[in-house]
Amino acid sequence: MNDIRPPPPLAVLQEVFGYDAFRGLQGEIVEHVIGGGDALVLMPTGGGKSLTYQVPAIVRHRAGRGVTLVVSPLIALMQDQVGALEEVGVHAAFLNSTLDGDEARGIERELLSGRLVLLYAAPERILTPRFLAMLDSLHERGLLSLVAIDEAHCVSQWGHDFREEYLALGQLAERYAGVPRMALTATADEITRADIVQRLVLERARTFVASFDRPNIRYTIVEKDEPKRQLLRLLRDEHEGEAGIVYCGTRKKVEETAAWLEGEGIAALPYHAGLDTAVREKHQNRFLREEGLVMVATIAFGMGIDKPDVRFVAHLDLPKNIEAYYQETGRAGRDGEPAEAWMAYGLQDVVNQRRMIDDGTAGEEFKRVQRGKLEALLALCEAHDCRRVRLLGYFGEASQPCGNCDNCLVPPDTWEATEAARKLLSCIYRMQQASGIGYGAGHLLDVLRGKHTDKVAQHHHDRLSTFGIGAEHDEARWRGVLRQLVALGHVVTEGEYNTLALTDGARAVLKGGVPIVLRVPREAPARARVRRDGKVSKAGRAGVAATLDADAQARFAALKAWRAEIARAHNLPAYVVFHDATLAAMAQQQPATLDALATISGVGAKKLEAYGREILRVLAD
Image (cartoon, rainbow, N blue to C red; front, side, top):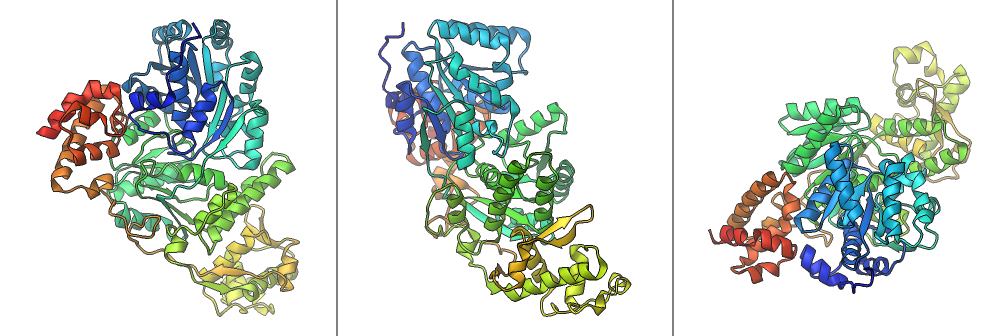
Protein backbone atom coordinates (compact mmCIF):
# COMPACT_ATOMS: atom_id res chain seq x y z
CA MET A 1 0.00 0.00 0.00
CA ASN A 2 2.88 2.40 0.80
CA ASP A 3 4.78 1.81 -2.45
CA ILE A 4 2.50 3.92 -4.66
CA ARG A 5 4.52 6.46 -6.65
CA PRO A 6 3.76 9.94 -5.20
CA PRO A 7 2.68 12.75 -7.55
CA PRO A 8 5.10 15.67 -8.06
CA PRO A 9 4.44 18.38 -5.45
CA LEU A 10 4.33 21.14 -8.07
CA ALA A 11 1.59 19.25 -9.92
CA VAL A 12 -0.41 19.08 -6.66
CA LEU A 13 0.12 22.80 -6.06
CA GLN A 14 -1.19 23.62 -9.54
CA GLU A 15 -4.05 21.11 -9.62
CA VAL A 16 -5.38 21.59 -6.09
CA PHE A 17 -4.55 25.18 -5.20
CA GLY A 18 -4.28 26.74 -8.64
CA TYR A 19 -0.81 28.28 -8.15
CA ASP A 20 1.87 28.04 -10.82
CA ALA A 21 4.93 27.96 -8.55
CA PHE A 22 6.05 27.76 -4.94
CA ARG A 23 7.16 30.98 -3.25
CA GLY A 24 10.49 31.46 -1.50
CA LEU A 25 11.43 28.45 0.63
CA GLN A 26 8.11 26.64 0.18
CA GLY A 27 9.33 24.25 -2.52
CA GLU A 28 12.46 23.31 -0.60
CA ILE A 29 10.51 22.66 2.61
CA VAL A 30 7.88 20.59 0.77
CA GLU A 31 10.49 18.35 -0.89
CA HIS A 32 12.31 17.84 2.43
CA VAL A 33 9.15 16.82 4.31
CA ILE A 34 7.81 14.60 1.51
CA GLY A 35 11.14 12.79 1.70
CA GLY A 36 10.53 12.04 5.40
CA GLY A 37 12.62 14.82 6.98
CA ASP A 38 11.77 16.75 10.13
CA ALA A 39 11.59 20.54 9.84
CA LEU A 40 11.47 23.71 11.90
CA VAL A 41 9.81 26.37 9.72
CA LEU A 42 9.94 30.07 10.53
CA MET A 43 7.93 32.02 8.00
CA PRO A 44 6.12 35.35 8.43
CA THR A 45 2.34 35.62 8.62
CA GLY A 46 1.03 35.59 5.07
CA GLY A 47 4.13 33.80 3.81
CA GLY A 48 2.31 30.55 3.02
CA LYS A 49 3.27 28.33 5.98
CA SER A 50 0.16 26.17 5.67
CA LEU A 51 1.06 25.07 2.14
CA THR A 52 4.36 23.67 3.44
CA TYR A 53 2.48 20.92 5.30
CA GLN A 54 -0.72 20.74 3.23
CA VAL A 55 1.07 19.89 -0.02
CA PRO A 56 3.20 17.14 1.62
CA ALA A 57 0.04 15.83 3.31
CA ILE A 58 -1.71 15.48 -0.05
CA VAL A 59 1.34 13.99 -1.80
CA ARG A 60 2.01 11.47 0.96
CA HIS A 61 -1.68 10.55 1.23
CA ARG A 62 -1.86 9.83 -2.50
CA ALA A 63 1.23 7.67 -2.05
CA GLY A 64 -0.63 5.58 0.53
CA ARG A 65 1.00 7.12 3.60
CA GLY A 66 -2.25 7.95 5.36
CA VAL A 67 -3.29 10.91 7.49
CA THR A 68 -1.47 14.11 8.46
CA LEU A 69 -2.15 15.32 12.00
CA VAL A 70 -2.11 19.12 12.41
CA VAL A 71 -1.74 20.42 15.97
CA SER A 72 -3.62 23.71 16.16
CA PRO A 73 -4.47 25.75 19.27
CA LEU A 74 -7.59 27.52 18.03
CA ILE A 75 -11.04 26.32 17.00
CA ALA A 76 -11.56 29.19 14.53
CA LEU A 77 -8.28 28.39 12.77
CA MET A 78 -9.18 24.71 12.46
CA GLN A 79 -12.60 25.50 11.02
CA ASP A 80 -11.30 27.95 8.42
CA GLN A 81 -8.45 25.69 7.34
CA VAL A 82 -10.75 22.68 6.98
CA GLY A 83 -13.35 24.74 5.11
CA ALA A 84 -10.70 26.00 2.69
CA LEU A 85 -9.32 22.48 2.11
CA GLU A 86 -12.75 21.00 1.45
CA GLU A 87 -13.37 23.84 -1.03
CA VAL A 88 -10.36 22.68 -3.08
CA GLY A 89 -11.34 19.02 -2.86
CA VAL A 90 -9.06 17.85 -0.04
CA HIS A 91 -10.75 15.61 2.54
CA ALA A 92 -10.01 17.27 5.88
CA ALA A 93 -11.69 17.48 9.28
CA PHE A 94 -11.22 18.76 12.82
CA LEU A 95 -11.96 17.30 16.21
CA ASN A 96 -12.92 19.88 18.82
CA SER A 97 -15.60 20.84 21.32
CA THR A 98 -17.95 22.27 18.66
CA LEU A 99 -18.86 18.73 17.49
CA ASP A 100 -21.55 16.58 19.05
CA GLY A 101 -20.92 12.92 19.84
CA ASP A 102 -22.18 11.50 16.55
CA GLU A 103 -20.17 14.01 14.50
CA ALA A 104 -17.00 13.27 16.46
CA ARG A 105 -17.42 9.50 16.12
CA GLY A 106 -17.95 9.88 12.37
CA ILE A 107 -14.70 11.78 12.02
CA GLU A 108 -12.89 9.21 14.16
CA ARG A 109 -14.06 6.50 11.76
CA GLU A 110 -12.74 8.51 8.81
CA LEU A 111 -9.44 8.97 10.65
CA LEU A 112 -9.00 5.28 11.45
CA SER A 113 -9.87 4.28 7.89
CA GLY A 114 -7.04 6.42 6.55
CA ARG A 115 -9.41 8.25 4.18
CA LEU A 116 -8.78 11.64 5.77
CA VAL A 117 -5.90 13.63 4.29
CA LEU A 118 -5.56 16.06 7.21
CA LEU A 119 -7.01 16.11 10.72
CA TYR A 120 -6.79 19.23 12.90
CA ALA A 121 -6.91 18.95 16.69
CA ALA A 122 -5.78 20.89 19.76
CA PRO A 123 -2.84 19.56 21.83
CA GLU A 124 -4.97 18.84 24.91
CA ARG A 125 -7.22 16.54 22.84
CA ILE A 126 -4.33 14.86 21.04
CA LEU A 127 -2.71 13.90 24.34
CA THR A 128 -5.77 12.09 25.74
CA PRO A 129 -5.51 8.28 26.01
CA ARG A 130 -8.39 7.82 23.53
CA PHE A 131 -6.80 9.97 20.84
CA LEU A 132 -3.33 8.50 21.33
CA ALA A 133 -4.82 5.01 20.97
CA MET A 134 -6.21 6.01 17.57
CA LEU A 135 -2.83 7.41 16.51
CA ASP A 136 -1.16 4.20 17.73
CA SER A 137 -3.48 2.20 15.50
CA LEU A 138 -2.70 4.39 12.48
CA HIS A 139 1.03 4.19 13.15
CA GLU A 140 1.01 0.42 13.45
CA ARG A 141 -0.68 0.21 10.03
CA GLY A 142 1.64 2.76 8.42
CA LEU A 143 -1.16 5.30 8.07
CA LEU A 144 0.21 8.17 10.20
CA SER A 145 1.85 10.24 7.50
CA LEU A 146 3.05 13.47 9.11
CA VAL A 147 2.68 15.53 12.29
CA ALA A 148 2.62 19.32 11.82
CA ILE A 149 2.73 21.43 15.00
CA ASP A 150 1.42 24.89 14.11
CA GLU A 151 2.04 28.01 16.27
CA ALA A 152 5.04 26.15 17.71
CA HIS A 153 6.25 29.19 19.68
CA CYS A 154 3.50 28.27 22.19
CA VAL A 155 5.81 25.53 23.51
CA SER A 156 8.44 28.02 24.70
CA GLN A 157 8.37 29.79 28.04
CA TRP A 158 10.45 32.51 26.34
CA GLY A 159 7.86 33.03 23.61
CA HIS A 160 5.05 35.58 23.70
CA ASP A 161 2.17 33.09 23.90
CA PHE A 162 3.31 30.18 26.07
CA ARG A 163 0.75 27.35 26.44
CA GLU A 164 1.52 24.61 28.92
CA GLU A 165 -0.39 21.94 26.99
CA TYR A 166 2.19 22.19 24.19
CA LEU A 167 4.96 20.90 26.49
CA ALA A 168 3.86 17.26 26.31
CA LEU A 169 3.96 17.17 22.49
CA GLY A 170 7.63 16.15 22.67
CA GLN A 171 6.50 12.60 23.49
CA LEU A 172 5.21 12.21 19.91
CA ALA A 173 8.83 12.00 18.69
CA GLU A 174 9.54 8.72 20.48
CA ARG A 175 6.02 7.32 20.31
CA TYR A 176 5.81 7.70 16.52
CA ALA A 177 9.43 7.23 15.49
CA GLY A 178 9.88 7.44 11.75
CA VAL A 179 6.92 9.76 11.20
CA PRO A 180 8.19 13.13 9.95
CA ARG A 181 7.36 16.09 12.18
CA MET A 182 7.19 19.81 11.48
CA ALA A 183 7.11 22.74 13.88
CA LEU A 184 5.88 25.99 12.32
CA THR A 185 5.76 29.56 13.61
CA ALA A 186 5.78 33.11 12.33
CA THR A 187 7.73 34.48 15.28
CA ALA A 188 10.70 33.21 17.25
CA ASP A 189 14.00 34.79 18.25
CA GLU A 190 17.11 32.67 18.85
CA ILE A 191 16.29 31.72 22.45
CA THR A 192 12.71 30.73 21.51
CA ARG A 193 13.92 28.67 18.53
CA ALA A 194 16.31 26.75 20.77
CA ASP A 195 13.47 26.08 23.21
CA ILE A 196 11.21 24.78 20.40
CA VAL A 197 13.91 22.41 19.20
CA GLN A 198 14.63 21.08 22.69
CA ARG A 199 11.04 20.71 23.91
CA LEU A 200 9.69 19.15 20.71
CA VAL A 201 12.75 16.89 20.28
CA LEU A 202 13.67 18.32 16.88
CA GLU A 203 17.45 18.26 17.23
CA ARG A 204 17.75 16.46 13.90
CA ALA A 205 15.27 18.72 12.13
CA ARG A 206 16.37 20.99 9.32
CA THR A 207 15.66 24.64 10.07
CA PHE A 208 14.13 26.86 7.39
CA VAL A 209 14.08 30.59 8.12
CA ALA A 210 12.33 32.75 5.55
CA SER A 211 12.74 36.51 5.47
CA PHE A 212 10.74 38.22 8.20
CA ASP A 213 10.21 41.26 6.01
CA ARG A 214 6.63 42.30 5.22
CA PRO A 215 7.35 45.14 2.78
CA ASN A 216 3.69 46.01 2.27
CA ILE A 217 3.25 46.94 5.95
CA ARG A 218 4.03 50.51 6.94
CA TYR A 219 5.21 50.81 10.57
CA THR A 220 4.17 53.93 12.48
CA ILE A 221 4.78 54.61 16.19
CA VAL A 222 3.61 57.85 17.82
CA GLU A 223 3.86 59.31 21.30
CA LYS A 224 0.56 59.13 23.18
CA ASP A 225 -1.42 62.36 23.14
CA GLU A 226 -5.13 61.60 23.66
CA PRO A 227 -4.64 58.16 22.06
CA LYS A 228 -8.30 57.48 21.30
CA ARG A 229 -8.46 60.71 19.31
CA GLN A 230 -5.21 59.78 17.58
CA LEU A 231 -6.75 56.41 16.67
CA LEU A 232 -9.92 58.06 15.40
CA ARG A 233 -7.89 60.36 13.12
CA LEU A 234 -6.04 57.33 11.76
CA LEU A 235 -9.26 55.46 10.98
CA ARG A 236 -11.06 58.43 9.45
CA ASP A 237 -8.14 59.85 7.48
CA GLU A 238 -6.59 56.67 6.15
CA HIS A 239 -8.69 53.57 6.81
CA GLU A 240 -12.31 54.62 6.57
CA GLY A 241 -14.53 51.63 5.85
CA GLU A 242 -11.64 49.18 6.08
CA ALA A 243 -11.19 46.11 8.25
CA GLY A 244 -8.69 46.33 11.08
CA ILE A 245 -7.72 45.23 14.57
CA VAL A 246 -7.17 47.50 17.57
CA TYR A 247 -5.26 45.88 20.44
CA CYS A 248 -5.73 47.07 24.04
CA GLY A 249 -4.04 45.87 27.20
CA THR A 250 -7.12 45.22 29.36
CA ARG A 251 -10.62 43.84 28.93
CA LYS A 252 -12.12 47.03 30.34
CA LYS A 253 -10.26 49.16 27.82
CA VAL A 254 -11.36 46.85 24.98
CA GLU A 255 -15.04 47.33 25.83
CA GLU A 256 -14.71 51.09 26.41
CA THR A 257 -12.82 51.61 23.13
CA ALA A 258 -15.22 49.50 21.06
CA ALA A 259 -18.23 51.36 22.50
CA TRP A 260 -16.52 54.73 21.91
CA LEU A 261 -15.74 53.89 18.27
CA GLU A 262 -19.35 52.79 17.75
CA GLY A 263 -20.44 56.12 19.17
CA GLU A 264 -18.18 57.84 16.64
CA GLY A 265 -19.88 56.01 13.79
CA ILE A 266 -17.26 53.28 13.23
CA ALA A 267 -18.48 49.66 13.15
CA ALA A 268 -16.51 48.04 15.98
CA LEU A 269 -16.79 44.83 18.04
CA PRO A 270 -15.11 43.89 21.34
CA TYR A 271 -13.26 40.60 21.87
CA HIS A 272 -11.57 39.30 25.01
CA ALA A 273 -11.40 36.10 27.04
CA GLY A 274 -13.93 37.37 29.59
CA LEU A 275 -16.76 37.47 27.09
CA ASP A 276 -19.17 34.57 26.80
CA THR A 277 -17.90 31.93 24.36
CA ALA A 278 -20.93 32.36 22.09
CA VAL A 279 -20.37 36.13 21.94
CA ARG A 280 -16.69 35.69 21.08
CA GLU A 281 -17.52 33.23 18.31
CA LYS A 282 -20.23 35.50 16.95
CA HIS A 283 -17.92 38.52 16.87
CA GLN A 284 -15.05 36.57 15.33
CA ASN A 285 -17.32 35.12 12.63
CA ARG A 286 -18.68 38.57 11.82
CA PHE A 287 -15.16 39.97 11.52
CA LEU A 288 -14.12 37.15 9.18
CA ARG A 289 -17.25 37.27 7.03
CA GLU A 290 -18.18 40.96 6.88
CA GLU A 291 -16.25 43.80 5.29
CA GLY A 292 -15.09 46.95 7.03
CA LEU A 293 -15.41 45.83 10.67
CA VAL A 294 -12.94 46.92 13.36
CA MET A 295 -12.18 44.32 16.04
CA VAL A 296 -11.09 45.84 19.36
CA ALA A 297 -9.37 43.08 21.29
CA THR A 298 -6.89 41.84 23.81
CA ILE A 299 -4.22 39.42 22.62
CA ALA A 300 -6.83 36.67 23.14
CA PHE A 301 -7.81 37.47 19.54
CA GLY A 302 -5.81 36.91 16.42
CA MET A 303 -3.71 33.76 16.36
CA GLY A 304 -4.44 31.93 13.15
CA ILE A 305 -6.75 34.63 11.77
CA ASP A 306 -6.45 34.18 8.00
CA LYS A 307 -8.52 37.21 6.92
CA PRO A 308 -6.38 38.58 4.08
CA ASP A 309 -7.76 42.12 3.81
CA VAL A 310 -7.00 43.48 7.29
CA ARG A 311 -5.75 46.93 6.32
CA PHE A 312 -4.44 48.05 9.71
CA VAL A 313 -3.43 46.77 13.13
CA ALA A 314 -3.34 49.45 15.84
CA HIS A 315 -1.93 49.16 19.35
CA LEU A 316 -3.27 51.47 22.06
CA ASP A 317 -1.00 49.78 24.61
CA LEU A 318 2.55 48.49 24.41
CA PRO A 319 2.89 44.75 23.61
CA LYS A 320 5.10 42.59 25.81
CA ASN A 321 8.00 42.27 23.37
CA ILE A 322 9.00 42.44 19.72
CA GLU A 323 7.83 38.88 18.98
CA ALA A 324 4.32 39.77 20.19
CA TYR A 325 4.41 43.04 18.24
CA TYR A 326 5.55 41.29 15.07
CA GLN A 327 2.98 38.49 15.41
CA GLU A 328 0.12 40.93 16.03
CA THR A 329 1.07 43.45 13.33
CA GLY A 330 1.58 40.56 10.89
CA ARG A 331 -2.18 40.06 10.78
CA ALA A 332 -2.37 43.12 8.55
CA GLY A 333 -2.03 42.89 4.79
CA ARG A 334 -1.86 39.14 4.33
CA ASP A 335 -3.02 39.73 0.74
CA GLY A 336 0.16 41.68 -0.03
CA GLU A 337 -1.68 44.97 -0.46
CA PRO A 338 -0.62 48.13 1.46
CA ALA A 339 -1.40 47.91 5.18
CA GLU A 340 -0.40 49.73 8.34
CA ALA A 341 0.93 48.80 11.76
CA TRP A 342 0.26 51.79 14.03
CA MET A 343 1.05 52.13 17.72
CA ALA A 344 0.70 54.89 20.32
CA TYR A 345 2.80 54.51 23.44
CA GLY A 346 3.84 56.57 26.42
CA LEU A 347 5.58 56.60 29.76
CA GLN A 348 2.82 54.70 31.57
CA ASP A 349 3.17 51.81 29.08
CA VAL A 350 6.84 51.49 29.98
CA VAL A 351 6.07 51.63 33.70
CA ASN A 352 3.28 49.04 33.44
CA GLN A 353 5.33 46.54 31.43
CA ARG A 354 8.34 46.81 33.75
CA ARG A 355 6.13 46.31 36.79
CA MET A 356 4.45 43.23 35.25
CA ILE A 357 7.88 41.66 34.85
CA ASP A 358 9.26 42.73 38.24
CA ASP A 359 6.14 41.76 40.21
CA GLY A 360 5.75 38.38 38.49
CA THR A 361 6.36 35.10 40.28
CA ALA A 362 8.86 33.79 37.71
CA GLY A 363 12.51 33.19 38.49
CA GLU A 364 15.17 35.87 38.11
CA GLU A 365 16.59 34.34 34.90
CA PHE A 366 13.18 34.49 33.23
CA LYS A 367 12.72 38.09 34.38
CA ARG A 368 16.16 39.02 33.05
CA VAL A 369 15.30 37.67 29.60
CA GLN A 370 11.91 39.41 29.59
CA ARG A 371 13.51 42.73 30.58
CA GLY A 372 15.92 42.36 27.66
CA LYS A 373 13.03 41.69 25.29
CA LEU A 374 11.13 44.72 26.59
CA GLU A 375 14.20 46.94 26.20
CA ALA A 376 14.52 45.83 22.55
CA LEU A 377 10.89 46.83 21.95
CA LEU A 378 11.40 50.19 23.67
CA ALA A 379 14.47 50.80 21.50
CA LEU A 380 12.27 50.19 18.44
CA CYS A 381 9.72 52.70 19.76
CA GLU A 382 12.33 55.39 20.49
CA ALA A 383 14.36 54.80 17.30
CA HIS A 384 15.28 57.72 15.06
CA ASP A 385 16.25 55.46 12.17
CA CYS A 386 14.38 52.90 10.04
CA ARG A 387 11.88 50.87 12.08
CA ARG A 388 12.07 47.92 9.68
CA VAL A 389 15.86 47.67 9.90
CA ARG A 390 15.58 47.46 13.70
CA LEU A 391 12.66 45.02 13.60
CA LEU A 392 14.36 42.63 11.18
CA GLY A 393 17.68 43.02 13.01
CA TYR A 394 16.03 41.66 16.15
CA PHE A 395 15.40 38.41 14.28
CA GLY A 396 18.96 38.34 12.95
CA GLU A 397 18.15 39.62 9.45
CA ALA A 398 20.19 42.43 7.88
CA SER A 399 18.34 44.97 5.74
CA GLN A 400 18.47 48.47 4.28
CA PRO A 401 16.24 51.47 5.15
CA CYS A 402 12.80 50.62 3.80
CA GLY A 403 11.26 53.90 2.74
CA ASN A 404 7.95 52.67 4.15
CA CYS A 405 7.97 53.44 7.88
CA ASP A 406 7.25 56.72 9.62
CA ASN A 407 10.93 57.43 10.28
CA CYS A 408 11.87 56.87 6.63
CA LEU A 409 8.90 58.79 5.23
CA VAL A 410 9.16 61.74 7.62
CA PRO A 411 12.58 61.61 9.36
CA PRO A 412 12.12 62.77 12.97
CA ASP A 413 13.87 65.76 14.43
CA THR A 414 16.29 64.85 17.22
CA TRP A 415 17.98 66.80 19.95
CA GLU A 416 21.03 66.34 22.14
CA ALA A 417 19.41 65.59 25.49
CA THR A 418 22.39 64.58 27.65
CA GLU A 419 22.28 67.76 29.73
CA ALA A 420 18.50 67.54 30.07
CA ALA A 421 18.80 63.92 31.24
CA ARG A 422 21.33 64.98 33.87
CA LYS A 423 18.99 67.71 35.11
CA LEU A 424 16.09 65.26 35.43
CA LEU A 425 18.16 62.66 37.26
CA SER A 426 19.57 65.32 39.57
CA CYS A 427 16.07 66.49 40.39
CA ILE A 428 14.96 62.96 41.34
CA TYR A 429 18.07 62.61 43.52
CA ARG A 430 17.60 65.98 45.31
CA MET A 431 13.89 65.39 45.98
CA GLN A 432 14.53 61.97 47.47
CA GLN A 433 17.50 63.26 49.47
CA ALA A 434 15.44 66.13 50.89
CA SER A 435 12.35 64.13 51.84
CA GLY A 436 13.59 60.56 52.20
CA ILE A 437 10.83 59.30 49.90
CA GLY A 438 10.18 59.06 46.18
CA TYR A 439 7.67 61.03 44.09
CA GLY A 440 5.71 60.41 40.91
CA ALA A 441 6.31 61.77 37.45
CA GLY A 442 3.77 64.62 37.63
CA HIS A 443 5.29 66.16 40.76
CA LEU A 444 8.83 65.67 39.45
CA LEU A 445 8.02 67.61 36.29
CA ASP A 446 6.39 70.41 38.29
CA VAL A 447 9.57 70.81 40.35
CA LEU A 448 11.81 70.52 37.30
CA ARG A 449 9.87 73.21 35.40
CA GLY A 450 9.53 75.49 38.44
CA LYS A 451 5.76 75.31 38.89
CA HIS A 452 4.43 76.61 42.24
CA THR A 453 1.79 74.06 43.24
CA ASP A 454 0.32 73.22 46.64
CA LYS A 455 2.30 69.97 46.74
CA VAL A 456 5.54 71.76 45.87
CA ALA A 457 4.94 74.24 48.71
CA GLN A 458 3.87 71.49 51.13
CA HIS A 459 7.16 69.60 50.67
CA HIS A 460 9.30 72.77 50.33
CA HIS A 461 10.59 71.57 47.01
CA ASP A 462 10.72 75.13 45.73
CA ARG A 463 13.81 75.49 47.94
CA LEU A 464 15.71 72.75 46.12
CA SER A 465 18.65 73.70 43.93
CA THR A 466 16.99 71.79 41.10
CA PHE A 467 13.70 73.73 41.31
CA GLY A 468 13.04 75.30 37.90
CA ILE A 469 16.27 74.12 36.25
CA GLY A 470 14.20 72.62 33.41
CA ALA A 471 12.03 75.65 32.65
CA GLU A 472 13.37 75.81 29.09
CA HIS A 473 11.36 72.73 28.00
CA ASP A 474 7.62 72.04 27.99
CA GLU A 475 6.02 69.08 29.77
CA ALA A 476 5.78 66.94 26.62
CA ARG A 477 9.52 67.30 26.04
CA TRP A 478 10.33 66.35 29.63
CA ARG A 479 8.00 63.36 29.53
CA GLY A 480 9.94 62.16 26.51
CA VAL A 481 13.19 62.46 28.44
CA LEU A 482 11.77 60.59 31.43
CA ARG A 483 10.28 57.88 29.22
CA GLN A 484 13.62 57.29 27.54
CA LEU A 485 15.48 57.15 30.86
CA VAL A 486 12.97 54.59 32.17
CA ALA A 487 13.27 52.67 28.90
CA LEU A 488 17.06 52.65 29.20
CA GLY A 489 16.85 51.43 32.80
CA HIS A 490 18.36 54.54 34.43
CA VAL A 491 15.11 55.29 36.29
CA VAL A 492 12.69 52.79 37.81
CA THR A 493 9.22 53.13 39.29
CA GLU A 494 8.49 51.67 42.69
CA GLY A 495 5.49 50.80 44.82
CA GLU A 496 1.78 51.34 44.47
CA TYR A 497 2.15 55.01 43.53
CA ASN A 498 4.80 54.64 40.81
CA THR A 499 7.38 56.73 42.64
CA LEU A 500 10.62 57.33 40.76
CA ALA A 501 14.06 56.16 41.85
CA LEU A 502 17.52 56.08 40.29
CA THR A 503 19.32 52.87 39.38
CA ASP A 504 23.04 52.23 39.53
CA GLY A 505 23.17 52.96 35.80
CA ALA A 506 22.07 56.57 36.39
CA ARG A 507 25.47 57.42 37.84
CA ALA A 508 27.17 57.25 34.44
CA VAL A 509 24.53 59.55 32.90
CA LEU A 510 24.88 62.06 35.75
CA LYS A 511 28.62 62.19 35.15
CA GLY A 512 28.03 62.91 31.47
CA GLY A 513 29.49 59.60 30.33
CA VAL A 514 26.39 58.41 28.46
CA PRO A 515 25.20 60.55 25.51
CA ILE A 516 21.42 60.81 25.24
CA VAL A 517 19.92 61.73 21.85
CA LEU A 518 16.12 61.85 21.71
CA ARG A 519 13.48 62.31 19.05
CA VAL A 520 11.37 65.44 19.19
CA PRO A 521 7.77 64.41 20.07
CA ARG A 522 5.37 64.79 17.17
CA GLU A 523 2.12 63.39 15.90
CA ALA A 524 2.60 61.76 12.52
CA PRO A 525 0.51 63.64 9.93
CA ALA A 526 -1.82 61.94 7.48
CA ARG A 527 0.17 60.43 4.64
CA ALA A 528 -0.52 59.03 1.23
CA ARG A 529 -0.18 55.27 1.03
CA VAL A 530 3.41 54.56 0.12
CA ARG A 531 4.90 51.43 -1.38
CA ARG A 532 8.28 49.94 -0.46
CA ASP A 533 9.87 51.73 -3.44
CA GLY A 534 8.72 55.06 -2.01
CA LYS A 535 6.10 55.73 -4.68
CA VAL A 536 2.51 56.44 -3.76
CA SER A 537 0.46 53.29 -4.27
CA LYS A 538 -2.76 53.26 -6.26
CA ALA A 539 -4.01 50.40 -4.11
CA GLY A 540 -5.85 52.52 -1.59
CA ARG A 541 -9.22 51.77 -0.10
CA ALA A 542 -10.27 49.68 -3.11
CA GLY A 543 -7.20 47.44 -2.79
CA VAL A 544 -6.37 45.22 -5.76
CA ALA A 545 -9.31 46.60 -7.77
CA ALA A 546 -7.86 50.13 -7.82
CA THR A 547 -5.81 49.40 -10.95
CA LEU A 548 -8.83 48.15 -12.93
CA ASP A 549 -10.57 50.27 -15.54
CA ALA A 550 -14.27 51.11 -15.24
CA ASP A 551 -15.53 48.01 -17.09
CA ALA A 552 -13.25 45.71 -15.11
CA GLN A 553 -14.35 47.42 -11.88
CA ALA A 554 -17.94 46.53 -12.73
CA ARG A 555 -16.97 42.90 -13.40
CA PHE A 556 -15.02 42.83 -10.11
CA ALA A 557 -18.06 44.13 -8.19
CA ALA A 558 -20.28 41.52 -9.84
CA LEU A 559 -17.82 38.75 -8.95
CA LYS A 560 -17.67 39.92 -5.33
CA ALA A 561 -21.48 39.89 -5.11
CA TRP A 562 -21.54 36.36 -6.54
CA ARG A 563 -18.79 35.27 -4.13
CA ALA A 564 -20.75 36.66 -1.17
CA GLU A 565 -23.74 34.49 -2.10
CA ILE A 566 -21.55 31.37 -2.36
CA ALA A 567 -19.83 32.14 0.94
CA ARG A 568 -23.17 32.53 2.74
CA ALA A 569 -24.50 29.32 1.24
CA HIS A 570 -21.38 27.39 2.32
CA ASN A 571 -21.04 29.19 5.68
CA LEU A 572 -17.49 30.27 4.84
CA PRO A 573 -15.59 33.56 4.86
CA ALA A 574 -15.62 35.02 1.34
CA TYR A 575 -11.83 34.82 0.96
CA VAL A 576 -11.98 31.03 1.36
CA VAL A 577 -14.00 30.85 -1.86
CA PHE A 578 -11.60 33.13 -3.79
CA HIS A 579 -9.22 35.88 -2.72
CA ASP A 580 -9.78 39.41 -4.00
CA ALA A 581 -6.60 39.13 -6.08
CA THR A 582 -8.03 36.14 -7.95
CA LEU A 583 -11.33 37.93 -8.61
CA ALA A 584 -9.45 41.02 -9.78
CA ALA A 585 -7.44 38.90 -12.22
CA MET A 586 -10.68 37.39 -13.55
CA ALA A 587 -12.15 40.87 -13.96
CA GLN A 588 -9.02 42.12 -15.70
CA GLN A 589 -8.48 39.18 -18.05
CA GLN A 590 -12.18 38.43 -18.64
CA PRO A 591 -11.67 34.75 -19.61
CA ALA A 592 -14.38 33.40 -21.91
CA THR A 593 -13.60 29.67 -21.61
CA LEU A 594 -12.92 27.22 -18.82
CA ASP A 595 -9.40 26.63 -20.15
CA ALA A 596 -8.66 30.36 -19.98
CA LEU A 597 -10.16 30.58 -16.49
CA ALA A 598 -7.95 27.70 -15.35
CA THR A 599 -4.80 29.75 -16.07
CA ILE A 600 -5.65 32.36 -13.41
CA SER A 601 -3.71 32.03 -10.16
CA GLY A 602 -5.89 30.62 -7.37
CA VAL A 603 -8.22 28.61 -9.60
CA GLY A 604 -7.58 24.92 -8.93
CA ALA A 605 -9.26 21.93 -10.54
CA LYS A 606 -12.01 21.50 -7.90
CA LYS A 607 -12.99 25.17 -7.91
CA LEU A 608 -12.92 25.24 -11.69
CA GLU A 609 -15.31 22.30 -11.74
CA ALA A 610 -17.55 23.72 -9.01
CA TYR A 611 -17.70 27.36 -10.03
CA GLY A 612 -16.20 27.72 -13.50
CA ARG A 613 -19.40 28.03 -15.52
CA GLU A 614 -21.01 30.36 -13.00
CA ILE A 615 -17.96 32.65 -13.11
CA LEU A 616 -18.03 32.74 -16.91
CA ARG A 617 -21.73 33.62 -16.74
CA VAL A 618 -21.09 36.47 -14.27
CA LEU A 619 -18.28 37.83 -16.46
CA ALA A 620 -20.40 37.58 -19.61
CA ASP A 621 -23.32 39.37 -17.94
